[in-house]
Image (cartoon, rainbow, N blue to C red; front, side):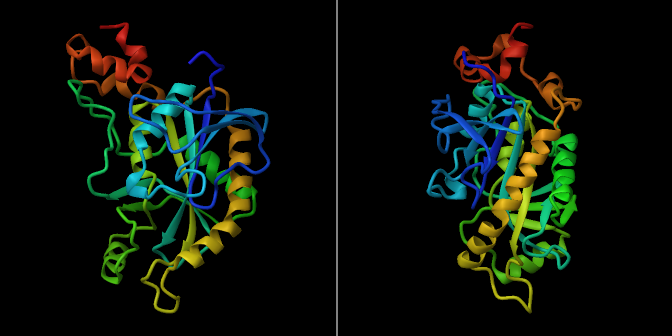
Length: 291
């Protein structure tokens, strides 16, 4: 990319299709080696910082969770120069203490998706990134602190179970997941976290509770209407939290997310097919000069 790098990315989930309060600069449509991202990236100024915003499901919410081109979305951020990605997503609460309209900043995942592509690698190049702690700790901390400053009820930590969807859970599944100690349930973000780790981009998510799934005996079963209503109520809070978190981020990173591949690449890069080297050029650039 020849334009000025954009170091911070934001992925808006259900209900957050733009960045309220941001000053838009331009729209950028990218063609990545993995196809088109969900929509154009909107480059804007947020708290004086250049930010690239992408609506996860596209403008008008056109893309199912299982249809999302996660690789294109994350690779597009890498092409723009992103070093950090903050995401927002709607979730169901799996704990009594996490009430609808509360915010959770999870620190763990359980993967219950099926058949989604979750890696950039393959095609003659093997890499195994560490994923024991799937979120960037400093970025998580920035979100949690910004949430508290915004006056939201914040749950710092918890396990996000990522399900396939698009149907909601059965009651039996909901009770099973609760027995595992899961905090929230959603249909996105896990692939984003894995791919961001491979792309050496810091990643954290703001999980916005909209409902109690279908396990809660005294609450009505989850409906799209209920979720959308709570999403609208959560949108303003999410915007405040994102603005606060972005404003608080230091210019340079202090974590190890930017050196993930230094110990993850298994294949001798001299043996990697040229097509794979070209396809992953934005990710492999720091390492290709060493082969």
